[in-house]
Length: 223
Image (cartoon, rainbow, N blue to C red; front, side, top):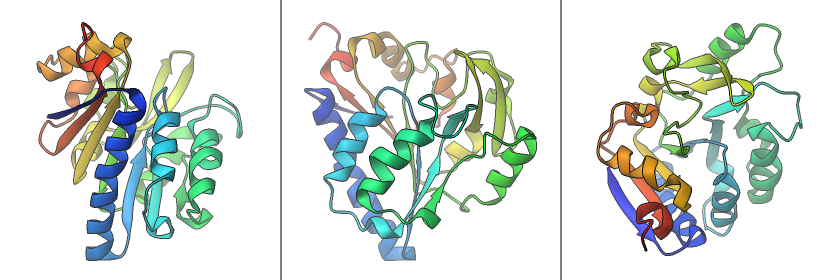
């Protein structure tokens, strides 16, 4: 995993956004579209702001979710709420290209299978966060989802919510993966991830073609 360290959270998000711009243009040059899967979490807002400022042909981006909490539509707990209103609508991604997980379905397993069937053959970019406990996506420590073979799975309650999530094999099949990690509270988990601590859920992410964008506080808590 390559580590890119910036001075502040905003600078780290901008570095991520600049990197994504290059990848998106390359993908569009080859296939006309770029497929992007985005996580929720505490760093999403910072990343949204940075991406809004980039010069990407957003009309050619197919936007997907990495994970989602099972909660009503428009609920503040839903990753989709900010993803749509604070990002997709702001950059003008067509509604037909915004693919949200159906977590209000009565049969979540069937909904996960439908979402899997609609995914691209391979993601160009998967955005990931890192929890202080070492989780990423909605892969709780010790969860069976860490060993799941299906592309999309439903996890048991984690931090108050049942979740739907892309699984490690699908994430690892992406052409590129990138973490955005900021804040001193993430420093221990980031250090363990860089060291290859297999006890961390995030260690399920393939190291090759994976970049970590971090602020100085997360990369070096003594800075």
